[in-house]
Image 1 (cartoon, helix red, strand yellow):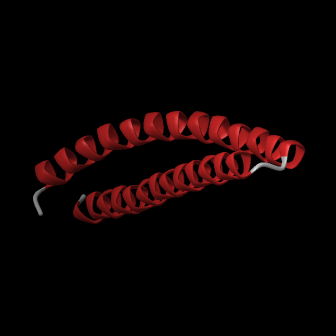
Image 2 (cartoon, helix red, strand yellow):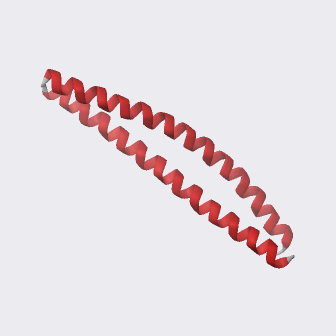
Image 3 (cartoon, rainbow, N blue to C red):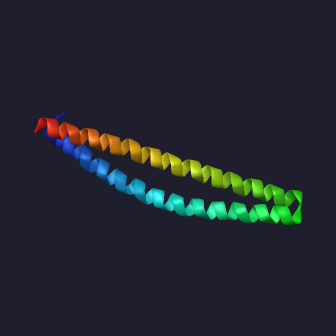
Length: 96
């Protein structure tokens, strides 16, 4: 791959990395909210001991689990992109 193409891919990767970190920040905030909501619903379910409260707790927990999974996927994508960026930087060093 030509030096110019490698540099272009590094620039594109840098932009993608910035967007992923922003997305990760939002996902972390949302996860915190969903975890607190699930905990609140758990306490309500314990206190009220009604099927409706237990259902609300299960739903809130599902949302927290889904958001945690999404956050973990973003982490994994960042790791893959970092490795790709490192490989491109290595290629630039070899070509120099």
